[in-house]
Image 1 (cartoon, rainbow, N blue to C red):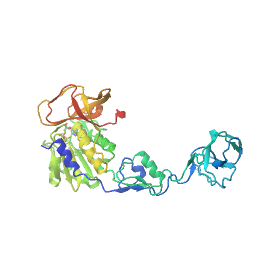
Image 2: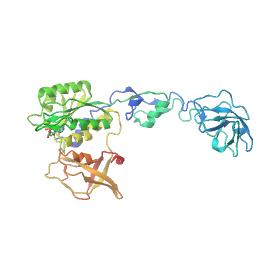
Image 3: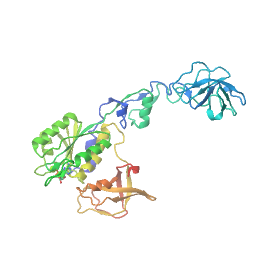
Image 4: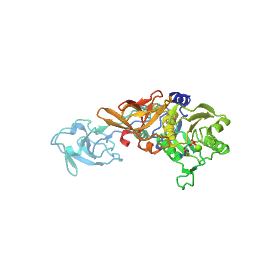
Length: 404
Ligand code: AMP
Ligand code: MG
């Protein structure tokens, strides 16, 4: 059977960054730039005052000498006259430095009246002036190919007038729940029915990864329904995540239909728990992730396999969560030796002696509330039968520490 590591490798060696497109800045947060971005102009674009104060020639600043103030210059205004020797202009932060002036003395370092200013202490020539291009010169490299666009990058691009940026776009991911037993969260389930938690939960996961989630209508357990839903989803999305119907039950049609449609199977069934009957296919260059219907494996598969795939498609260099070794505070034992990688939901916290983890509680595949508490997934190798209290485990840290 395919192992966890093999399954991940099979997927990631096929995933490639999506062809670059230009997107508006407002849509670019978290994406990677697909080309080097050079400054088309200087930043700041003109020499300006760094303080509210007085602009004048530095050589005119002499203790006890009163200087005539000819007017006031606000940010957004330009001076009508040069600053002549022996005169000053009151100036606000960001206003262009008037011609003739080379220095700004902050308000609080002066004595001043309506139309005069005196300088009790010296100020260096050139002080409190921001020079054109001192931040970025025209032609300077602003962002190198592969840089992730963080808020500061968005701000810098806006200041340079670069209102569109070439990036690897967000993949559109169709989420499709299959199962005759499912009803919408807004409905009251009838006998034997349950609410569909996978579609909303998985859509939320996909959104946090920076991709675009497209919830599709729930699909009944029949060949025809599954086939037409798969066709429809692949017509508009680059990735399809189906939940349920991927095992060998009488009503499990996902695998059957994908094979009939000629999809290429990367693997089906992985030596892992949860997520044994997990399969991945490609059809016309698009990924289809068939995740089990049980809510825990569904979320864990999306976290462990779909997330790195989407990140690779978005051109991100770091595909994986940070991982750490933690001390497992409660013991864990495998029921029977199964050779499978067990993926445990854990709560991690930092202690004086390092990172500690404890299980979220019962690890059953249907216990969705175990996912509520988890901020990490511990990966226990297939040949490990027992982890005594205090043993080391490898943990994928699935949440920002400050969010938990
Ligand atoms: P399946 O993988 O289709 O055999 O489903 C396995 C289990 O997960 C069954 O108990 C289903 O009722 C349940 N299940 C399947 N799909 C969903 C879903 N979208 N939301 C909640 N539970 C589901
Ligand atoms: Mg089912």
